[in-house]
Amino acid sequence: MQVSVTFRHMDATDALKAFAAEKVSKIEKYIHTPTDAHVVLSVEKHLHRAEINVSANGMRVRGQESSADMYGSIDAAAQKIERQLKRYRNKLSTHKAREGHASKVRLSYVDAAQHGELGELPMNTPTSIVETKELDAHPMLVEEAIMQMDLMQTDFIVFINAKTNNVNVLYRRKEGNFGLIEPPRQVG
Image 1 (cartoon, rainbow, N blue to C red):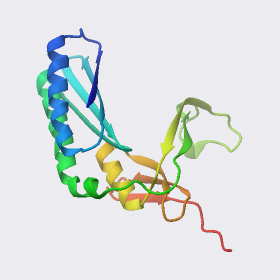
Image 2 (image 1 turned 120 degrees about the vertical axis):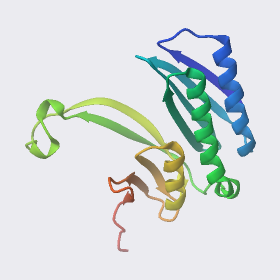
Image 3 (image 1 turned 90 degrees about the vertical axis):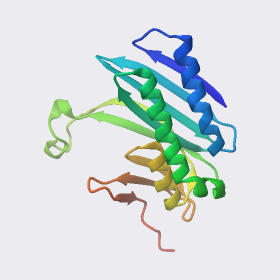
Image 4 (image 1 turned 180 degrees about the horizontal axis):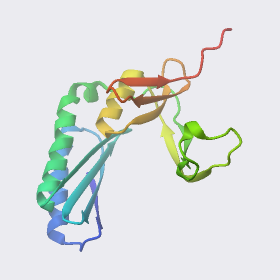
């Protein structure tokens, strides 16, 4: 397992780096493919924050914790990932990459704060793009996209629907259930 540790707003220590690498390497027993892990350790005011991102064979898992102790934060974030992987262990072991090619999708964040709420904007009001990211949209079923969203702890995921071969967006609704955005089916 390839583990990289990044320190933000704090001094880098070999002891913390070794502790983080040791905790993350224990996760490897749940994933049987080559794995990359990135650990970000930071201090904000009095809170010590540990964020662990693990990627293996197209699957990404994210765990994040904050506490008064950095060692406790690292341990709790690693345990969170371990619980997620245990929960999805059967699904991960039977998961096979879908046929088809991944596609790049552009995600842009628009700054609407300077103009008020989006519902109040006139149609011709210029807005500014704050940030743009490129995402990989991998072929998967909707059920796999839900599993991936839970593992990554994100509010949305862009993927290529393995059944329709179209780009879809799955998002988490305020009520806790999911919504799916997909292009309309063309009548042939």
